[in-house]
Amino acid sequence: MPAVSGLLAEGLRRLGSAAEARTLLGHAAGVEPSRLALLTEVADDAAGAYATLLERRAAGEPVQYLTGLAWFRTVEVAVAPGVFIPRPETEVMTGWAIDRLVGLPGEPVVVELCAGSGAISAAIAAERPGCRQYAVELSTAACRLAERNLAGTGVALAEGDMADAFPDLDGTVDLVIANPPYIPLEAWEHVAADVRTHEPELALFSGADGLDALKVVARVAARLLRPGGWVCAEHAEVQSESVVGVFAGAGAFTQVADHTDYNDRPRYVTAVRATKLAG
Image 1: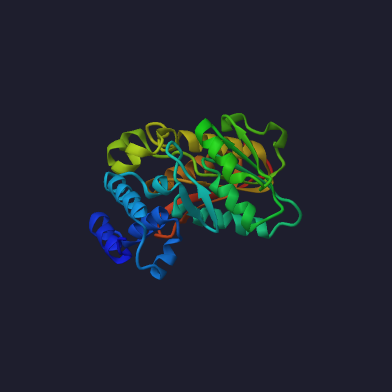
Image 2: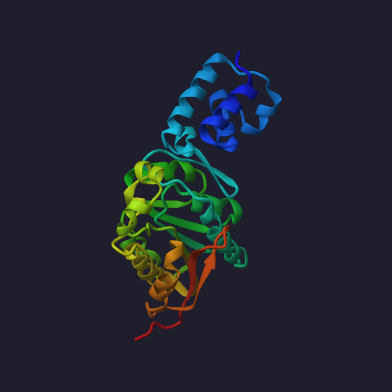
């Protein structure tokens, strides 16, 4: 049977990443990557499966699609081709939202727009139980995956356009959170090849300047939130000024501020629903 050390060395040589090699070998062998250190060998069929995974990863297929899983904060979620892969950068915004919710009594009402795999809603449900949560996603494939990830959480998931989602909640929501598509179409060639090739365009691109979906998020948040409620939305690092302008210019928010991610790059905007709408 092949030695674990040799297989990991081959993975590092092929991929340039020891972490990815461990993840893929653990997946092929059916063990947690952290437990590979307890093994000296793996079965021949596991080694064969690992070799196939290395080939696919070397060709650019995302690790998360190969394993079907991704960690997001404290939860492990299912991922699949055709659905956007949750990013570590989004964990910071989600933490900001959870901090706001922890300070609220009772059952805060939370709406996630552009829910994708449902990772954000799943993390909120795990870390701030007791919220009344709602999520909406346009993609049928993503919605089916979110159903799996949100099973048993109590999150009410809807498939459809966020623009007219949950009208019965108008003016009652405590927090709206969104990781919408925000890459400008003109930036297509600058997107990493593995992302451009494998992840869904619907979850990535949003108009010439990347702001189309974010403008809808601002309008929907203004409709859903109670006065004093919060909205937070992710954006590209180059969009800090323009996204702050979208929310500041909506006539519905105060305390518009931008925040950085783990890498100290501008990543998400927050705002508070004003008591009265401007104009």
